[in-house]
Image (cartoon, rainbow, N blue to C red):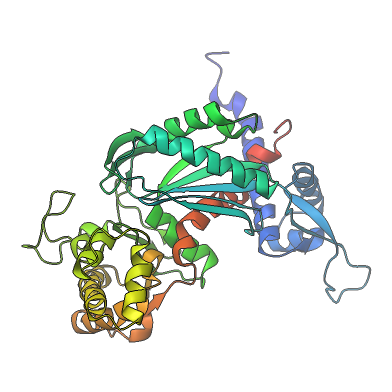
Length: 409
């Protein structure tokens, strides 16, 4: 009723919020390793009675399972039952739209891949509706193969993402101001076939950001690094203190449009001499005398370089020099512990790294720089798609309340 004192509605809401926070606290401890209820209580500071109540809620929601006796603790008495994440519970659904491919991936709550699909398809200049319709077919196939009910969907795209899931610009796709979140939901609704995917929460995210987050979550446990990847264009993610640096409007990481030669060739973004004009896929193919070649640019040029082709090797060396110049500026500005090459750069890395290391050594002058600080991702091109799927699971663990609340699906 209007006009009531503010305190009249605060009690139940506060209790509900506290229980939701405690659900996340308990699930977060269990997510690190299976734990008995007593161990969860010790790890969270909650009472055993509270942990038991919260655990029952998580069990009922299908988020955790009882795995059997917990590891011996050295205390007298029988060990408790270990609680672990449910590998058959809600999963994470990831999708990717690339300039020359589409991808779909499902992971379970433990982050294990249950299905992953990728098809090579040129999307440059295609209508977004047609691309999304093709993507929905791939998503449905991945969900059917995984046998899990996804709790959310994250789509990785090669461009700038604004509020409301609008793709503001993706120069290499030829798209601008595309409402991808609503468009994808409409495509899912049209092609759902009763799978219920259209009802999922949908998030649109830059592919390099997701690649960087995947490196953080699934890689070597790095907390401070600059992640650089490439497909048709060049992207980057900045992770500092274990958190993605987004910038004031969410556009941080556009390394591909940092000028490395101010009087260089015009770029699709409207500027001149951008890194992408020297280290993007099309630029490397041109420099290797392979302009117009079809297929995977990185594999094509790397194979030529491995066979001793001087043009391919020089093209990659030139890309490495440009990458080193741009990376050195970022290192001097941000002071990351490492620079990680991912995406399309992983295959030709042996011919990119020498020139990159030389530029970094010459230009990073604010602190000592060593070659071992420039590394190559083990995730390769899987990074953005894996990051998209795992982002959903990380969201569940951070806030299981919507799934564990009474009456939740």
